[in-house]
Image (tube, rainbow, N blue to C red; front, side, top):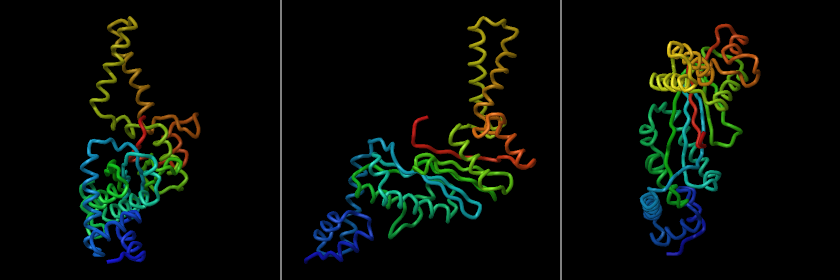
Length: 274
């Protein structure tokens, strides 16, 4: 049977596939929409299998907060061209919207959510067939709290952060702290949050460096701890130099806003190598 432009347009809205892909699928399925959708889906599965060993290093990273629940998610692909496609960005946003609405705690929960006539996992596979590139969800992070600030670096969808504050503040304050996390890449809020293995490794490095410099053995530990103090200032958010005013730390900036204000947690995800 003849395939009409109206049919092609309808299938494109249903699947997001290109016009020619929709036409070919409808022609092969003799105008049957369920059959055409199956053909498009099978194409996605074939592409996903064929390109499973490829590296998906580009993509779209988005962040959202609603009703005290925040999430970051990345939909990854192979090329910057696909990453900037409006349909690809919309799919990422739709997935994030669903994840936040359902307050999903894990990526597995997100993938299992319904989308269209199937699941989010299937929707990603379907999009792989449309673009011809490997695609995968990654970087799913969540935060909960009554005051969460977010930041999408330069609005370019490759680096996002969110910061949970101890109390509600001017959005500008939260935005600037979230920007600090993006720019300075801390690994913990304060000293207590630095992983024990990371701290132990830094102590070993500091001690070895002191020995190489010929420092007396009875001074090694004191010198190492002095260097650890400097390390804390580099990797702990509250001890970092505040990027908007180098004369104070982030903690001092927050205290200048409100004596009881601090950061309780943060998340950061980027597609770019640090």
